Picture 1 (cartoon, rainbow, N blue to C red):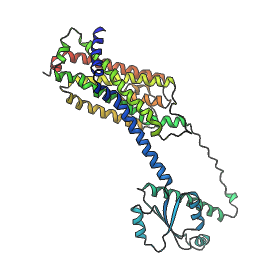
Picture 2 (picture 1 turned 180 degrees about the vertical axis):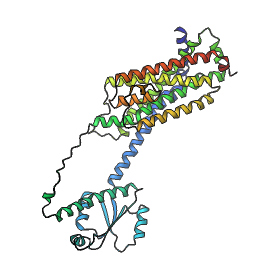
Picture 3 (picture 1 turned 120 degrees about the horizontal axis):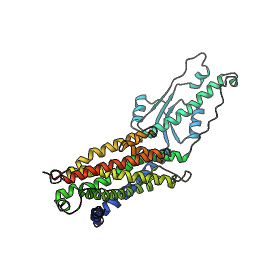
Picture 4 (picture 1 turned 135 degrees about the vertical axis):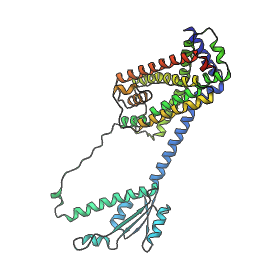
Length: 396
């Protein structure tokens, strides 16, 4: 235990005695994420405000007065007369974004509708640009009014519309706003947490082992009267603490930026919707996951000859973790099968999503934690073997 503490203290001191490392590992990750996500939230909010406040430019021909009045009274629009204009010119202006929408009614539209029993239905054409948000917004607004207009006409054609009533629809939206927020957080947070853990371990791990091999200082450590397994435990423990602190910095940054990023207003519940038990469960998963990630990074770092090689070898594992995280983010539900939580990376991401959506069991939490610890112990045993191999440690 004393030897483990010696190695642990050496690695921690190496980082905390360097102001540049403190800044780059513990401060910049959280600060940069907070600034980036807050600005993203600001930009998204401004885009939504601009879209809602935009006055739609609509060119129309022969539009019934009742339809025009309904659109004008419900939405912010600016009407222009399209009579006499060529259809090609109208389409070009819509495509170029000059017009938001073009709607062309056949002449005598309402009279032909009134004489539906003797005449064919009149034509109605709408041109809009699906690639433009303002155009799509105008299209949705106009078609909503047209659907109401059509329903009114159909009802007026019936002598006794009440006799044709199939059902009376009463809609109530039952929404738990806290669950809505939790689902939004769970879509991205587990993946981000894994990324943060890997990023923290990758910023420290390669230099802690491969860096010492490259500089030749690993020989000094190995010849000291310290057991190799103590070196392995000390390295993993110190790197775990440093990586966890780096990940927590990013985690705090994302939590502080969530209200702005998710566009939460004062009418919605605060993002502090989780209990002390939930935060404790998240912390336990973080602790056991970070030692797993650090153990994996340490194995790769011990195998590599240089820091550059170690970083290159870690990247495929890092990308795999991102892919697994993305698969979970777009998944329908949290997988509750116990055996799933034995799968490295996926199990940790899955249980984090379950905690964040209030949909997890204590059994799955315990299985995830125990499996992470067991995997880490396996990595430590392997790391001990690698430290005992001169061929590996001295690149022979």
